[in-house]
Image (tube, rainbow, N blue to C red):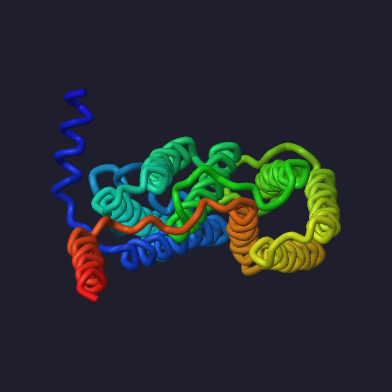
Length: 335
């Protein structure tokens, strides 16, 4: 097809930066996707969400913060700094796509994951703009965070894909156990949604004038806690299941990291609730949520094996092997 041929000709011109550079780019991408979620919480708890009151400009007629009679300079620069960071993260995601497309042999699955991450990052910029234009309505903030967590998951999958092959996945644990892990991931998704609802009804709106979700926060916090206990219960059940089938060490490593991060995150959440939701713990809780997503994605990828990383065909090595075999044959025939 003409479009595919044109795309192939374009990607053929991209330099092959090597597997190691690609892996480091994907590590940076994962860190960036995590950091932007954390800085978003800083914007919210400092009341800087409308420090730039329009989008894509900071204020009407100016892209950068300027002296404003109703806004402190610090709140403007916190919001503007978060926007600049978003641009930087978009550039990192773009570099990941270009590096993967230029690599040989081509890694189709890895390319798709990086393209999805880039597309989601661009979408996040649009969602952030809508959030500002709608004066930080609670549901726009919730969507903004949930998409960010989805990008953390995708970035982790891409990083893991860079260290494995592209063969059809070979399961390392039975199907019922994989289904149990999938169920746990579904509960994790519900847990994240409940967390956004608690935030929506809580005191940190990003701006003092923003309306809050009109639901009892204690009821929402109880729902959030019950989902956490359900998630922990599923993780405990998984430990018995993994032991019963003698799961390989790679599965256990992913499991213990996930369990440890979840326990730490639960402890932060309880202290946060008991101490009246202090700003610093809100930010730590968002960081913890992102790390839970990272660990859950890691565990998910350990449940199957896709073989070793493919390497590029090197005709010089093949010729050297053939020449060596030929010389051995000549030596044998002369004896």
